[in-house]
Each structure stands twice: as C-alpha cells, then as structure tokens.
Image 1 (cartoon, one colour):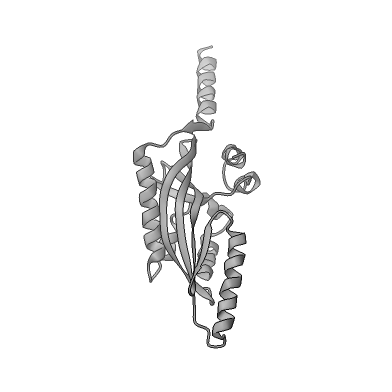
Image 2: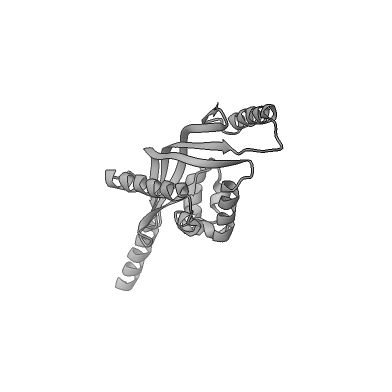
Length: 205
C-alpha cells in the first residue's frame, strides 16, 4: 500500500511539474533580457560578423526544424543584399507581455523597440531618376509589408521603426536567455519543435 501511495505521489508531482504555469518576470530577468538584446545588437552591428555567435542567441530546438547552417545562410543573404545593406539601430525592451513556464523552462513574450535602416547602394547602370522611382516603389511596398511599423524614406535610405514582439526563452540547463521569432496563431509551426503544451499556449495567443 505504501508503495502505491509513493508511486501515486510521484506520478502526481510529475504531472504538476509538467503543467504550463503563468509567471511574472522579475526586474532582474527583464534586465537580463535587455542585456541579451544589447549583446545581440552589438554582434549584428559588427563589421566583421561572427555568424556562429549571432546564431547562438537562437533557442536551440529551432535547429531541429532548420539547421544552424541554414539560418546562417539566410542571415548572410539578408546582409549581403546586392541592392542595399542593412543597419540595425535599436533593440530595446519596452515591456513583458505574458510569460509562462513549462518543465522549468520560462517563455516570455517581450515587446521591444525595433529600429533598422536600409541603405541603397550605388548602381552605375541606374540613372538618378530610376533610383529615385525604385526607392519610392520599395518604400510603399515596405509600408504594406510592415504595417505595424513606421516606414520613412530619407534620401537613399528607408528607415523602419516600431514595436515588435519576440519570445525570450530561459532554460536553466542552458543558463542564459535565447530568442525565438513570435508568430501569431502559429500553433502548428511551434508544434514542430516545441512541446505540444507550449505550442498550444503560444498558438492561442
């Protein structure tokens, strides 16, 4: 009988520990996330980029879906665009927007101030008028693409600014905050590499 009670209590404790629990981040945790953002921004602003270091800020389970090399390749393509180059100007925490834990891993939706700029390169085969029309066209295109951001043209640059949401993840086994892209109503996507309970929670928000 004692063995049955012990087994029941053990099973109950495992069930309870595997539940999704709402949590509130401490001031220290928010500061840690902001420091992570600052370090990440510093790395992507560097003239000589350490791609391995940059991708190390990604929450590792995503690599089950996309390999680290795939992600590095996408980043390199984005930074080596033949038409324009990108500078990331600001990435700063504004506020926490819902946090929860599952199996000792904390997931937090963080709203942050995001600012970046596209700088258009010189093209010898393009007249001044053609370049002007092209940048105007892309400005309007980006306004439709980034509806939640302010998109402004200034000379040969297009400036983007606005609030974005990202998922900050703290796994005690890793010991540092990592990042995941936040996509609304994307339970199916998250279910491909996160526990189903976490995917369910993220997918309904």
